[in-house]
Image (cartoon, rainbow, N blue to C red):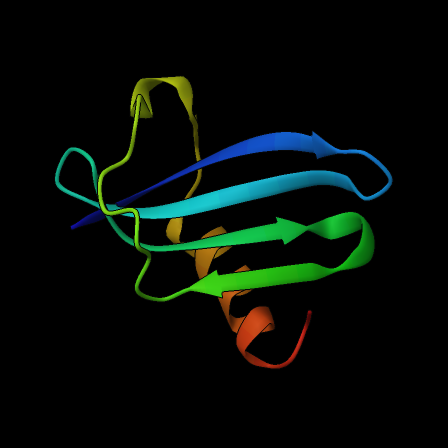
Length: 79
């Protein structure tokens, strides 16, 4: 069973970049994405180089629906 976490960081001139993670076990990253809603930028990482999540306790909870919705938008051509 996967869990979903996210964190946000302000990017000057763009808005808030949200990093969403699909996690297996305690801290193994399966997939991740970056989303800047203000300009609809989405970058998908189906096989991220970073495999271990650092300090997961500092991240916010997300859920499968949110992750899959943004992931699907990224696959359909959002940049």
